[in-house]
Structures are given as C-alpha cells and as structure tokens.
Image 1 (cartoon, rainbow, N blue to C red):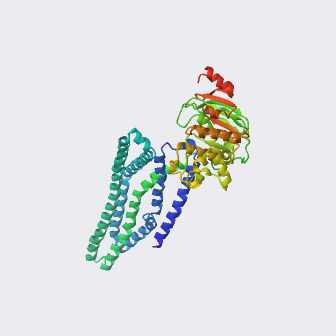
Image 2: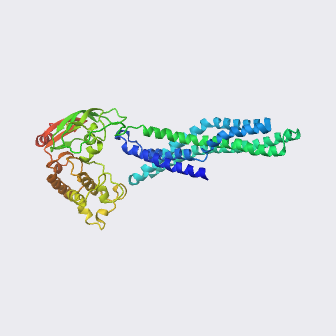
Image 3: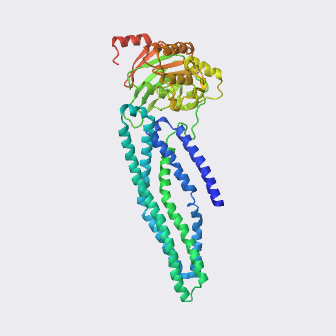
Amino acid sequence: GLRGFFVDEAGKRANLKISASLFQKVLGLRMESRPQSIGSFSKNLQEFESIRDFITSFSITALIDVPFVLLALLVIWYLGGIIVLVQIISIILLLAYALFIQVPLQKAVEQSFQASSQKNAILIEGLSGLETIKMLGAESQIQRAWEEAVSYIAKWSARSRFLSSSVNHFSFFVQSMSVVGVVVVGVYMISNGDLTQGGLIALVILSRQAVAPMSQVVSLATRYHRARTALKTLNQIMELPVERPEGKTFLHRSQIEGAIELKNLNFAYPNQTVKILNNISFKIKPAEKVGIIGPIGSGKTTLGKLILGLYQPVSGMVSMDGTDIRQIDPADLRHSIGYVSQDITLFRGTIRDNITMGTHDIDDNAVLRASELTGVNEFVKKHSMGFDMEVGELGRGLSGGQRQCVALARALLLEPPVVVLDEPTSNMDNRTEVLLRDNLSKIIENKTVILISHRASLLAMVDRIIVIDNGTIVADGPKTSVLEALKRGQLNV
C-alpha cells in the first residue's frame, strides 16, 4: 500500500546517501588510516545495508502503531473492564522476553559479524593471491582457514537465528493465549450479565490490535542488534582522518617550479615504533636531477611517497617551492608530480583509460606523445584494438614491463614539473630500458627529477646522488664522487 511505497522510497534515498558518503570517505582517507585487511574492510562497508534494512523495514513502521496500543487498551478497559489485564500481562511478557534475550543475541550478532569480515578477508586474499597459493602448494592451508571461518559463522549465525525465531514463536504464542484469555474471561462476564456477545467479539478484535504491534516491536529489537553492530563499525570508519578535513583551507598552486626541501624529517608507519626515516634533510633545486640509492628497507620508497603527501611525517617538513606541502591542495600537488611506484596498479578498462586516469579533456595527441616516450606504442600498435585494448582487472592482461610503460605514460601525460620514479624499469628488457632512458633524457631538461634506482643506465640521467641507509643520509654529492666512494668501499652501505 501507500505505507510500503513510502518505505521503499526512503530505502532508495538512504541507500544512495549512505553508500555515496561512505565511498567518498574511503577515497579521502589518509594512507596512514588505510585498513590492514581489504577484505574485512570491504565487508564492513557492505554492512550499511543492515542499517538501511532496519530503517526501512516494515517492522519499524509498527512503531507508528504503538500509540494506538494505548488507545486499544483504553477501549478494552471501557468495554470489558478487568479483561484489559489479559492484554497488559501479554505485553509485559513480550517485553520481558525481549529484554531477556538481548545480551546473548547481541553477542551472537557481534561474533557472526566479526567472523563474516574475517571470511571475506580470506576470500579476497585467496582470489588475489591464487597464483602464489598454487606455486607454494598452500591450497590446503587456505582451505582450512576458510572452513574454520565458515564453521565459526555457522555456529554464531545459527545461535542468532534461533534467538530471533524464538522471539517470533513466543510472540505468536502470547498473541494466541491473549485471545484465549479474552474469550475465557469474556464467557464468565457474559454468564454474569456484565458483557454482551457482540462486546466479546469487539474485545477479541481489539485484543489483537493491542498485542500485534508490540509483537512487531519486539521482533524489531532482534534486528536492532545487527544494525547497531554495523553502525558502530561504520562510525569508526567515518571517524578516520582524511586528507581534506572539514573546515581546512588549502593553498591553490596551479603552477609549481619544482624546488623541494626536506627538513628534519622523521617518519614511522602506523603502529610501528621503528623509524623508517630519521632526521632527513636535503634541498633539491628546480630542474635538478637527483638519484636516490640504498639497500632494501632503507626508506627510499617511503621518501617518494612523503614528497607526494601520501603520508604525513611524524615530525619535520616537506616543502614544495618553499611551502609546506600540507598547506597545498593535494590535487594540485599530485597533478604537478609525475610519480611511478614500484608496485604498479592499473584498473579495469582500456590502455587509454589507464593513461588518462585522473585527467580531464586530454586530447589524443598528448596520449600518443606520452606513449611514444615510454614505449607503450611498441606493444599497442601490434594489437588489433590499439589503445582500446583491455588491460584486465589490475592490469593482469599485460606483462610487468608493459604495466610499467603504461604507468610511465600516465605519469608524464600532463608534462609535470616534478618527476619521481621508483625503480621504473625493474620489469623491462634492456632494449626498452635504453629506449626509455634516451627518450626521458630529451624531455627532463627543465624538470625536477628524483630517480630511485640502482640501474647504472638510468643513473646516467642524474647529476647528484643521495645514499640512504637505515633511514639516514650517509652520502650526498655529485654523482661521480659518490659512486667513486661506493666503489672504494668508503661508504658502509
């Protein structure tokens, strides 16, 4: 009816607003707040449906009928006097039982909720790492973890369903007994001349009207726990820090020269006590070409991410053109920095979609230019679909080297004044690497370049080298003198 129509409309609007707000929040999260388990986090996000179902369920419309319960009780008292006690006792029994099962029901719902998140985490990890699982022969280990999670969910879900259904069964029993009670007491009253047969029929109808809404309210209490658990989780997500806090005004910097300074920079990843970077300080002039080298785990990659503002330092400062990057609009900063990370992530779609991602109104000439510079055109021209070639989920339709070519094209598309390259050719063959180096050398003359790599062919592009070890700078100077010191063993790296 009309009530159902309005409930459905409310559901659609709630679904749109809640899901949009949640996803906007997720995309705006600071990297320090990124969840450790993507599968578990995604499951928690989906739980907003529990809140929507609770808000828009037909049971909640029963709350509208609650005031009429009092009216029905008054009419029953007026017509039947003492018979009203039957309804009052029935309502008290319903409420008492609902209160009685609240604690065990909440525990069952929370345990089921947590186990469901864990199961989703295992599923996502299993699917994304399927190749590795097969290579290691770890199928049985993952299968066991999955079965344990499913078994745990089944146990607590069964308990939750049992408690929820017991409420419905008890409500039906109480409603039936209240009608029987009205009939029994009514018969005695008719025999005593205190009630007519028509009055008894009216009381039976009214008794149902008095108890039925309360039965629905009690049933609603069982749904409330799942919605409450989901709301608690979603509130925790909504309280996570974001890159653009409400009320904060950023500086708009559409033009960046490329002067970079790190001053007394200290950084540790969340929930870790060991510093990744310790008191790092250096300056890079506009259009300077700097190579950063160091052993595994020395903090080179982290340094690049801090320059992009993906993470915030524990103390110290990163500045761009003399301005702390925390004051610059993140969109302006990242559009001015072409960044290629070690771990290339492509998205479902075409080659062109991935190269132009995050940009607007880019013409084909810019795409072709970036593709020629980075070697993308070498494999695109051999494919019948050209730039409309699908890359597959996470770019799995391309080889590692091809993904790096696409990532480089993406980074250089807007001709940014600053370029940060983190092992950009680790998966490329020598021919492609040499081609890339020669092409980059032609276009980086007026760009600030930070190259994180040990490859001698790429280091030919830089004039200065910074050596990092254990999060500290152990050498910083002209390329020739630093490399010479490394050869002689004068630097303990």
